[in-house]
Each structure stands twice: as C-alpha cells, then as structure tokens.
Length: 332
Image (cartoon, rainbow, N blue to C red; front, side, top):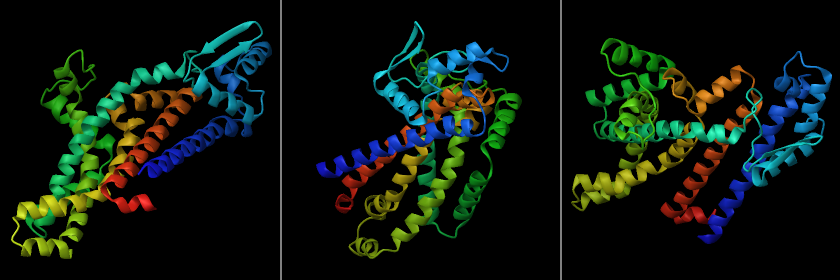
C-alpha cells in the first residue's frame, strides 16, 4: 500500500508541474507570439518607453521563457523579489504574481474568494450526491414504471438546461415572485443560518445540474449490478431486499461514481463561474470572469492553477480510495 501511495504522489507532483508549465506558456508565450506586450497591461497603452522598460525589467518579461517559468516556480515555493534598479518588491510564497490592474498580490486575492466557492461547491455536492443516488437507485429498482420515466425525464432536463437559464428562472420564481431573500454569501462563523439560507438557492440550482447526471449513472450502474450472479445468490439465500440492495448492490454500483465525483468537485472548487455570476457570489469563478473582462492575466493564471490543482488533488484522493476499496488496483 505504501508503494502505491508513493507512486500516486509522484504522479500528482509531476502532473502539477506539467500543468503549471503548459498554463504558463499559454498565458505568457502565446501573447508574445501574437505580438502582445504584457507590460502594456500594467502601465496602459499610452505609457512612455521608460515606464515600459521598467515594467519589463521588474517582472522579467525580457528573460527567455524558461527563465521566466523558473522564477515563477521559485516564487510559488519560496517567494520572489521583483527588482527595478534600487526598488525591490517582495512577494511572499506562494507567489503567483501581481494583478495587472490593482498591483496586489494574486494569492491573497484568491484566498479571500476561496471560502465563497468552497461553501458553494461543498453544499451543492452534498445535495447532488444525495438526490442523484436516491433517484437513480429508485429508478433502477422500479425500472419501466411511471416513477422511472418521470425521474429520467427530469434528469434529462437537468442535463440539458444550462445553469444560467435555471439560475435566472429560480431567481424569477423564488426571489422576485415569491419574495424570498436574495441569495448571497455570509461567512459561516459570522452567522451560520444566514450562510445556509443565502446559499440554499444556488446549491439547489447547481445540484440540479449534477444530480441529473448522477441519477442516470447510478441507474445504469445499479441495473448492471442487479443482474450479477452474486446478487441472485444473495437473494436465493433469503437475505432481505434491503440488505441485498444496500450492502451488495449499492456498494458495487456506486464505485464508478467516486471518480466522477472527485473530478466534478475538483472542477467546482476551481470556480463555478456561471453560478457565481448569476447569483453575484464573489468567489473564484466571479473573480476569474471579471479578470477575463479586464485582461488581468496573473489573476486568470492563478485561478486556472487553482482549478488544476484541485482537480489533481481530488484525482489523487480518488486513486487512494480505489486502493482501499479494491486491493487489485494497487497492483496496476
């Protein structure tokens, strides 16, 4: 088991390094190849040549790309100093650079927005797993019934309808028509009840999208599992149907969902852009959207690396869980 964990950890670290390099190239090599100058984003298009030269020197835009990437990687691990003549600006580790627009460090800005996205993703994840698994299992047990057809129709609608449509529709019905409080984020430790009520509608909207997918996957996996020989054997032994479904069928049928859940949750922790934009939640997704509008490359790069890091970490956790659930995976 230890060797398996070490292999997965090494794979995760290598993957993160590759992701950071590719992402860095996309954000700083591609603009240079298209003739764009990142220094202009700091000082504006009307800046004089002396100011542009100072920005290029301070942020190392004149260095070769591999040197820039090395300094960027060093900044993440040990911090970084930006030097312009006698002027030295220190960026503490993990340093993801400075915002083009407000000259603030990117990392503290992301950390400030993270609790909003974390609260949104965690609450929605609980709802979509519970709803998706429940409706999927019941549909599999009542295959072909009215319940099955109705549940799968709702699931199809959930998969098909975009989040900005369901989000705006829910706002129109529950907030503007029925008069419920407008959704918003309140820190959990300031007021847990307001935190819950302010995020309930975004949770339901986001969970509706994912629960539909999980219901369909659960139904398909359960139908396949319930046709296995060991399920018929368990029933032939006289075990109660609840035991057959819960102990034998559900455990095997839900195992493939672990991978999907890990990737979905990891992606959401990197920012649920549409949901946060619809409900005006100032999380990572909302932050990234505003940065895209203003071409603030360091912040976009930071959010992208955040999202990639969460996905790699969640994938690592899923791999380790698989090693516990199925010992045969450790031999691979």
